[in-house]
Length: 515
Ligand code: GLU
Image 1 (spheres, protein in one colour):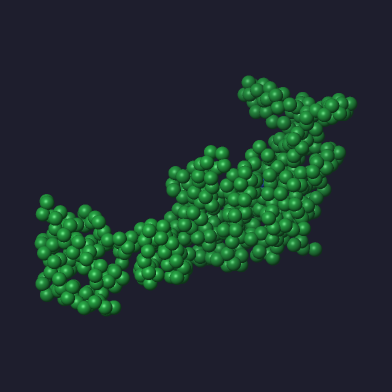
Image 2 (image 1 turned 180 degrees about the vertical axis):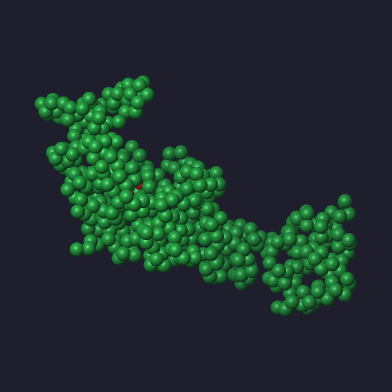
């Protein structure tokens, strides 16, 4: 019988969720939904030394913001809970003991100091120490010690760990859905700790036991877990769960923009982009790391961008909603190679989604931005500015930098443009123009009439079109940027335009006289 597809995202709450982790979760989600299956959130918090306060809440909030919904898990519930491993703690011991009983695992009594001494001895001989099939008989464990000795140590309550016992010289095969066939010889692998002296399972044991109990069919996770996979395959064998062992798919890394090495938090700081979905304040150091949300990215843009970092649809299409991604996603189209993060592309995606936001919504967003700058204008006025400049923006915050002159008359004028344009008696020419503009009766069509006048005036008097129009732009905008002058004149209206031209005549006139 076909098993129902069940996948999980299993983060450890050790800090803010890296954007690569978000991509892993996204691919799991897409795969589950495409196949009509379930998507679980399991929190793997068995390593108490790395636990970070607030990280679990951060993970949940990130997915809420992104609109990626879990079917089961921490904060949701479900038939296979609890979904937080620390709450499943007592369950793992029996599985560890089962492996000891079957001869797949053993007690190891070596103290950290003893192991350290052995390691140092090896180092002195320029060798690497590994607890494995070659060394285990010379160490203090239930394989090397007599039965009575082991019983005595256990009775005395000596601290121990339970280690996996890799068989000698056995090829372990794994068919990864992305990497293809992977083979590893068991003699090369170290006898990983499965159960720790603090009564907690390690990641490996808890992960496999839970995937089994939660009926996970596919494990889709980062490439960094590939080296652990032979152990995981062996654990399924040791427990006798091979029939229901999930299929594995190890995702390629997210690389630095330059392409060399894994995208790290420091790259984000260095190149000015977030590597975390939400802003994060480290509870200990209070160091703040930027987030996509706070940097003005839209969740749809982040999802779209991440989907294409390591996967492609095989078509030219680049814009996909989450639902469209569900339709077209397939593991076969995930790349084997690392995907380079591209900041320009990230901005491009945000631009595309920002353009889909209605004028009304953008106007509201801009109104609150303006409010924080103590600027209040009618909604109609702000909406007319938004309509004019939205095309130029990648983020809501760009609305202000592209339109500040609509709200505040320029105090200064771009020096280079001023030198180039405001010359040959421009001050006098502008005085004439200002007087004439004043004569045109005000009203809705003032802008158009003003433009008609300017065109005629420039031609009739043999003036230089570029010089005059750019000087007016300088007076109104303070720079040579912005949409066309007719639009600007329509939005700002007669009084404001004339007052800015007059102000420029005065200020630039003084500047010029001073020179
Ligand atoms: N807890 C592991 C992590 O933090 C999960 C790895 C896996 O998916 O097996 O990435």
